[in-house]
Amino acid sequence: MTPTDAAQTAADAPEPAPGRGGGRAGARIRPARTSDVGPIRELVSPLADSRVLVAKEAVAYYESLQEFRVAEDEGGALLGCGAVHVMWEDLAEVRTVAVSEAARGRGIGGMLLERLLEDARALGVSRVFCLTFEVDFFRRHGFEVMSNQDAIDPQVYAELLRSHDEGVAEFLDLARVKPNTLGNTRMIRAL
Ligand SMILES: CC(C)(COP(=O)(O)OP(=O)(O)OC[C@H]1O[C@@H](n2cnc3c(N)ncnc32)[C@H](O)[C@@H]1OP(=O)(O)O)[C@@H](O)C(=O)NCCC(=O)NCCS
Image 1 (cartoon, protein in one colour):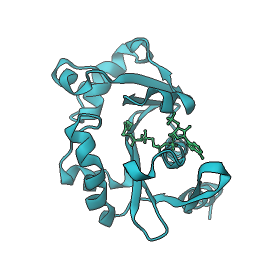
Image 2 (image 1 turned 180 degrees about the horizontal axis):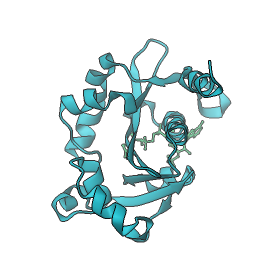
Image 3 (image 1 turned 120 degrees about the horizontal axis):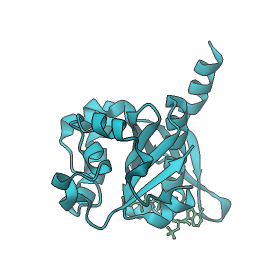
Image 4 (image 1 turned 45 degrees about the vertical axis):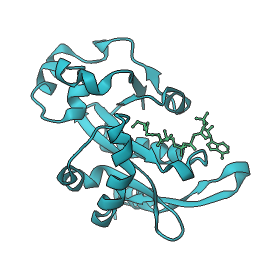
């Protein structure tokens, strides 16, 4: 096993999430499996209806399953999810970060996000973007509000325009997705 393999194995090991008062929330983070797609969609669906998250077809979740991590309780019930989507050599997006309402405020979202940032580091990117209403949450994890588009090289911008991904369109702030992004804040974090 190479050192990279060993690091990846360690990164894939389930881990408990801290609960309030330093206790354990009984949650663990692990890579998503195909059987998680149903519960992920149930978690995301109301958030997509209210335009907090991007609405996607079931097939899109299966196709991007390797991007996802989930948080589950001791009984294996889904508590949260999140994904990291590579956009360019140095850039990825953290997307679809969600924790069920009953499980919020226990550090599970923070743990998911930190794990996704580790995944992004392992993939080789140096910046991570997100589009969110949860500005304080992301700020606590090192994200800053993007003042303008100058974080993207014009040549890369032109290449990204070729993408069919809705999240990339939102990153580029294209007119056709503006109704979906109204009120969201564009944030970025250096790794
Ligand atoms: C954003 C979101 C994922 C956060 O999930 P979460 O599990 O509640 O996140 P955390 O518990 O790590 O942090 C949330 C709060 O709990 C507090 N908290 C975390 N761990 C704690 C602990 N051990 N003890 C006390 N408080 C704690 C944090 O300070 C934070 O405070 P806030 O309420 O002022 O934000 C969740 O609110 C959500 O699903 N939102 C809808 C989807 C969304 O907007 N996603 C982002 C765009 S991709």
